Amino acid sequence: MRRGFVLVSNLLEDVWQDAEAAMRALFPPDSPGTDFGGVPFPTCTALDQVTLHPNILSFARRYLNSEVLLTQSEAWCKRSGLDQRMHMDFGNHSFVRPSAEPEALAAIVYFDDVEETGGATAVVPFSAQHYPSDAWRRMPGIGLPFANDRTEAEVGQDPFRLSLYDAEQRVSAKKGDVLFYRHDVWHRGTPVFPGKTRRVLNLVFKKPDCHHIYNWGEGYARGNYRGRVEAVVRGLTDDQRTVLGIPKGRCRL
Image 1 (cartoon, rainbow, N blue to C red):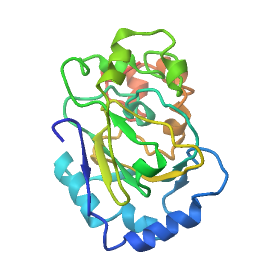
Image 2: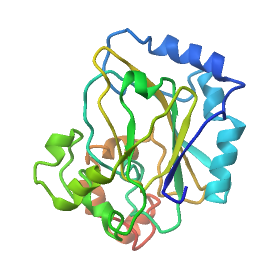
Image 3: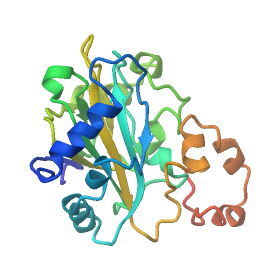
Image 4: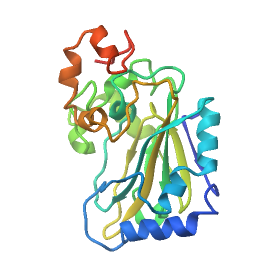
């Protein structure tokens, strides 16, 4: 995790057969549909055994050096050629700028080999060049207008943001692999091959005392994905923000 992310294999072998069958039932590989059709926890299927698997929980606890709380678990599929913009995930869950010490850990569990389906996750390793102290301000939806498509997001041709794509590393994940990454790591989804489906389970765990990191299913988190809640929070005083779990002086707005 020195680079901010790591791909781990062979964590889920004892539950994989049932989990794979459950994912196939939710998102058949050849069925029509839209991207990111999220099915949240609990699914009441074997996918829940993946979400709460002892090996995943152990990794999260060791990395965060803390007990952990689940804040997101959703089964997603991607069927399009969307070339996603570079982003960090913290803004989906919090109005607080990232801290130096990690407060949350995300994980992507892959149910397809990305070499066959496309849709690999591209990640930018930690470096002084690509992670200055104000890097979080350079993200569409935070310091810039929201856009999920790479072409739309990079219309301004900002040299810093363009350099992120030059530095990205595409993760060659296979079925059953788990990509763990910090909430403040630059990453993005790449296009799926025509006629293919890439299925994943997206997870997020946080430290229990980080009340400013909201559950994905809550109105704050989902509503802010496209910046809809920011106008409300922006107009509040520091004292009012504390009621929403935002520590004084740490709001990113």
